[in-house]
Amino acid sequence: MRKLVYLLLMLFVSLALNACKDFEDEDQMITVIDMVGDEVTLMENPKKVAVIARAAADMMIGFGLGDVVDGMYQSILDNPWVEVFYPNAANFHSYDYNESAELFLSRGVDFVLAPEKYISEELRANGVTAITVSLYGTPTYESVLYKIADLIAQIWPRTEDKVSDWKEKLDQAIDDITSVLDTKTITPRTIHYVRGDKDRGLGYTDTAGSLVETVYESYFGLTYLGKSFESNKPSIEEIMLQNPDIIVVGGAYQNKIINDASTTEPQSLLDAFVNNQVFNIPLGFVMWEQNSIALPLFLYDQANKLYPEYFNFNIANKTQILFKEYFDVLLSDDDINRMLHGFFPIDSI
Image 1 (cartoon, rainbow, N blue to C red):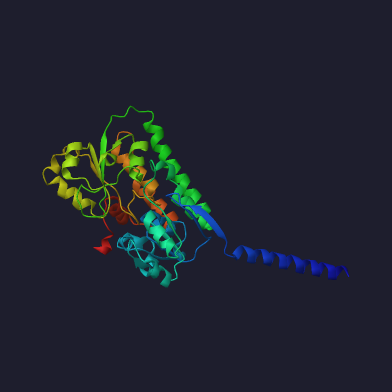
Image 2 (cartoon, helix red, strand yellow):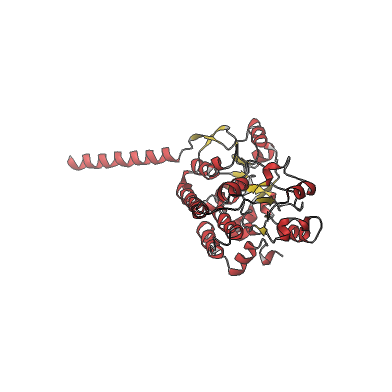
């Protein structure tokens, strides 16, 4: 009798455990608040995702979610570094910036990470769950610095440890820089950031509320000129009038833009060029100055360039360690050198 009771008890426990497991495996609805304040309800752990927002692209891969990505914005996939870090990206569908809901539905996409509010709203109105992740915040980006990573952890709880680790690394980078600069008397300087993902010369930037504004003003104590322009496409005349002390250039066209401007008047007469205060921003899965896995590296790299009298971080070593940890790729010295100088992999040329 006692043996029968024991067997029945074990059977009950087994059934209960299986029932709990089945319950955990069931899709559960969650509600998130995206980066523009929209409240969106969706299934936890969406299994087929379109990543149109560049700000979330390498985080999805670096936090271990490559298996749920159906495709990415074509401009992301045009970057040869993407397949270095994630070879399976060759199989991703290439999406336009403002793709139709019909295409997402036809491909069975159940969730879209969109770059702008109007895109997300239109998709949701047509039956596609979407949230907005952005490189802009209100009034500044500082209040949403960790928002994309936190959204990913909320939507896919299995990423929580990696997200937490990345946030700690970003916190450390900010502290490593601000703890030093806060003890120094900083000479006021202005900085002009050039978005070099398009070949538009010096007249393409990010405006007030951008991530780069927060980085350069809040952490490096500089005056960010992008907030003073009427649009993100200032004329050369506007730039000449501001005459920035420092110019930083990111994106795939950075070396061409720097070379063209340094050899063409009137741009070459800007103080930043005359005083050799023009710097590049390294490339990676996405541009380092975007909200990405490489954001801590961006801070360290710019610290070396903007304040060489105070900082001498080993950027090459930090780059190799971070990308090995998040993408399981061991970069060669040549790869790292090309990334740091804003070039594509040698095999892609």
